[in-house]
Image 1 (cartoon, rainbow, N blue to C red):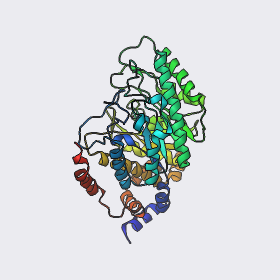
Image 2 (cartoon, protein in one colour):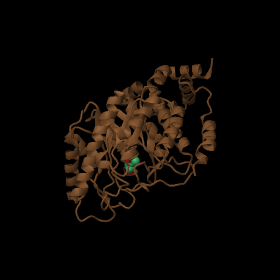
Image 3 (cartoon, rainbow, N blue to C red):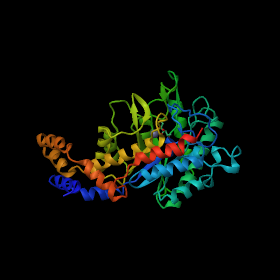
Image 4 (cartoon, helix red, strand yellow):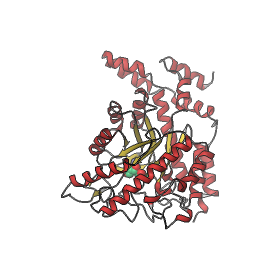
Amino acid sequence: MNRYEQAKQMFAAYGVDTDAAIGKLAGIPVSVHCWQGDDVIGFDGAGSLEGGIQTTGNYPGRARTPEELMADLKFAFSLMTGKKRLNLHASYAILGGDAGKVDRDAYRPEHFAPWVKFAKEIGLDGIDFNPTFFSHPKVKNGLTLSSPDEETRKFWVRHGQACLKISEYFAEQFGTPCLMNIWIADGLKDVPADRLTPRLRLKQSLDEILSAPYDKNKVVVAVESKVFGIGLESYTVGSNEFYQNYAATRGICCLLDNGHYHPLEYVSDKIPSLLAFYDRVALHVTRGVRWDSDHVVLLEDELKEICKEIVRGNATEKVMIGLDYFDASINRISAWVVGERNMQKALLFALLQPNERLKAMQEEGNFTEQMMLQEELKMLPYGDVWEEYLARNGFAGSDWFQSVRAYEKDVLAKRR
Ligand code: RNT
Ligand code: ZN
């Protein structure tokens, strides 16, 4: 009996079907962020990353052009497992002859056509999208949609509307809904004199964006809250309460980024809270170290807990999983692959729990056995099931890191 057959029996003893788990895992889409490859700079002219977020490190090989980023993504995707989507930001527009002429408030689907072609060529499930409300000269005093300057505010409203059209285009091209996630950095460094007025303006701006016609079956709009940003420590206009109420009253959804809450608040607990009210919940899976640092996703307890909530809440089709991290201090391809594989590993871990049995114990108040079982389960041979999953998906015995090293030597190191 090989290791997988043995593992299969061990899990079966707990009532867990490993074959079913492997099959299910392959069908859960994960949206991979393009911005790990170029340190969140994009191609529409930004010289540096602004908006309270930061990449640190200067490991060689940052992608500087669409061609380089696509080549890196293609390679990284070839090493990732499972059903994958591409998550793009508006700042990754490929403007061609429109460069310097067309601003973000007038981007059109055609500026993203090369991305569609690329994603189709490598067999992705679809593209998700994010308007880019940062790293741009029209961010005024750190504000966009909540700006008191009407011209500024209107510019960013038009940007949001333009992005709805582009999102719809992505959905049509792939036949899968496109998640359009709105995150703005708007906030203040120091103690505000007025916390309400900017929020009222944000509410108005979002209403104006959503008043543009779009097909709700094609575009799923989400809003992403945050606690603070660098240089914006005292006040964030788009807070958790603001967006949750906004989403609930407007029939859109919330995006939870697990780097965006106070250290003892857990996204694993927020997911089921929202599932009690919403058809969909979107995620940015990241890893904050001390702050919203966007370190590479590791296989940690909270990630497993997040996945358990998705799986045992029967919500693999309701929770839209996206990754959001950017580390410039290590090989960026490796960063992409390690994080994506950890997402998959955590999902597999959750799929391999005897969830119904554990739930029944909780319902019966059988907490003694529930604790015992949860702890016993931690030592089962998950790795053997993971290896089988890899083998069934064409990764048998592959030393993926070897090829990353070779790519670094042949491609990345030559970018100076
Ligand atoms: C910032 C948010 C946001 C960005 C990306 C680039 O704190 O997490 O989602 O990381 O949009
Ligand atoms: Zn995020």
